[in-house]
Amino acid sequence: MEQTRLVQYLKILSAKETELLAAFVESNYHNRNKRCVQLLQALLPYYPGFDGSGVAKEKVYARVFGKEHPYNDQVMRNLCSRLADLVYRFLITENLFWQPVLPDVYLLDELNRRSAYHLFEHQLKQARHNLEKMPVKNEDYLRSHFSLELQALMHYNRRYPDDVPAMIKQKNLNAGIEALGEYYLYYLLNHYLFYLNARNIYQHPFEQEAQWRQAIEVLWQTLPNVSVPVKAYYLLVEMLATGNEKFYLQLKLLLKDFAPQLPDNDVRNCYINLENYCMKAIRDGNEHYLTELLHVYQTEMQLNTHLNPGETTVSVMWLVNAVLIALRTGNIVWAETTLQQCYLNLPQQVQPDIYHFCMANICFYQKKYALAMQFLAVAHPNYYYSTMDIKCLLLRIFYEIDEFDLLYAQIDTFKHYLSNNEDNFPPQRIANTGNFVKFTARLAKLKEYRLKDAEIAAEIAACSQITFRDWLLAKAKEITG
Image (cartoon, rainbow, N blue to C red; front, side, top):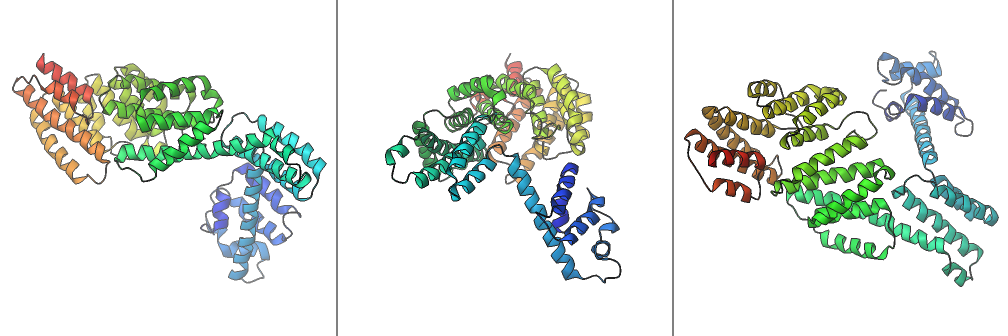
């Protein structure tokens, strides 16, 4: 039975929820089929894994119906289906009552349908009070606000069908319509933001952009006072769409003042996109954004948005990037301290490789090149850093220790690797890394044969797509004196 939908749903419940589910199924109001109760009682002792021979369908059937009854597959399927339906209803009910205002909306709808006007007006007042008690004005608030005022509109239409002036004066209703517009704007901004990031990474335009920007601007100009989350997403979109630094600075200021009042997911999303903006600025040659990006990572650590949503584990991507950026800004101690603090909170299966890769980079910046290569030898490529990242570090190590034969061999294999993996990485990353390899090769020739090239630093600075520009410029400066 391990693969049945019923067992799959039971697996996702917490221990407390299994107790609540048992009470739900045993309630005569929700269920009058005693066999469903018996089936649940037969399965729950095997929670949470539901594995082993004890959950074989024949054995479960015998515990429910008795050993004297031969196994009947159709009966068992029907019973599992009935219990699964009860689990669905339980989850829906639990979710409903976790919502701060949604139960009020459903109750108001019932009171409206029953023309219970006095009860409706009393409940509407209470529901509006519950709405304003919501700790953050997020998308749930906007949706609930509109839903409440829609019920109010239906109520006034039913009770005062001919009193148009009274309808026009309903300020709450007007506010509800504005909340609907803001709710739509919130999700439009979120959706547009996803496509903007994809466009910036893969350099691929999308057809709806002009249409979406027009809709966003109309709503932005029309809505009088948008909530902080909506304003944050608007600044994010403008920051990424235009590249204008003023939106970046405005968003930083907004988050500084309001981050504790924003939903965790919105704060996390804002900071991830601040990271993306800074990274793009760095790739475009704005090296001062290295320090900006480090400040973003440090703020995320203070706000705990470096943790995976709803968990105590650290985001692997955050830790790798934070360590690398700290090193590039000269904050070696912070990089090593942060790694030691966080790596044990990574998902266990990636801990060794992430630790070895980060330590290889730390040792490189400490000029402990032999130790860096030892760490690198046991750092296996994975989703969070690739063979490309390992090769980039190897090139810099060989350059620093004057192992030119190894360096040239690595450059040749790197070029083949890039040409063979063009479909596996975004075009921008291939271009950035290709230019890094090209300039590293030129610098190596200059260093090996003690030659001068007065133009190379300017060429590196002017290159529009390149990674590790700061390191290349430092090496060029050493050569040109």
